Image 1: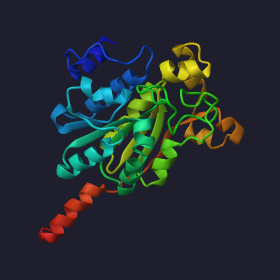
Image 2: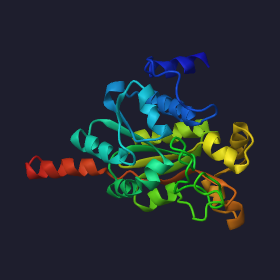
Image 3: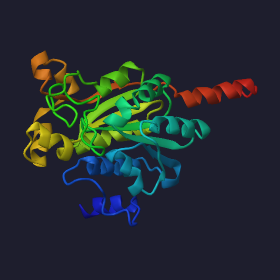
Length: 276
């Protein structure tokens, strides 16, 4: 454990930014640890990584790590990341977003980034709520759940982030919960090394804004629910629709290795110049 702690601290900025702003029990710190372990496992240097984030609780993650970092506007992290990757395809560009950032105000950008299959590694931290901005419902708040803007229960069907991203043509789409740290490490490591657009959705609890309004007495109760209800995608597909509603499918949804958009542009320029 001491070695793991030291590894993580080697990648953190030891500044006045600490202690961090995450609420007690928030799973975002678990995701940060997994990201650092995955980066280290691939032997990536700090200087070749650009970590881009938008607004929200997840948007604080780049503040704490010693990479090249960009804190962008709400919902626009993928647009900034696209520009960075096209300008310098050699960089490893990682995007961190929350569910509101990715699928509500930024939903159109996620759809087209996946469609273009541009070489980005994207982490979507899905806590089913707008956690930092007041606990409003997001496009992933489950049907029937309560929030500050749905006091009588969510009446709209929620988005399935992984299924949407898969349908849009991303190379690699996967999902884990923060109770599956080893699985999360493997999925993020694959996303970092696979060409094209790679998205890992992480289900992470927000007790402050979601749990307390939805009858979870403690943060621990939310973690226990994730542990009990996470089901490998292969088994999930065999469940009845009734049982699927109470389960969280995890694992790899799709895995391809097509060349990313930036590589296609490089080849086009080489053909124009007569280099190939």
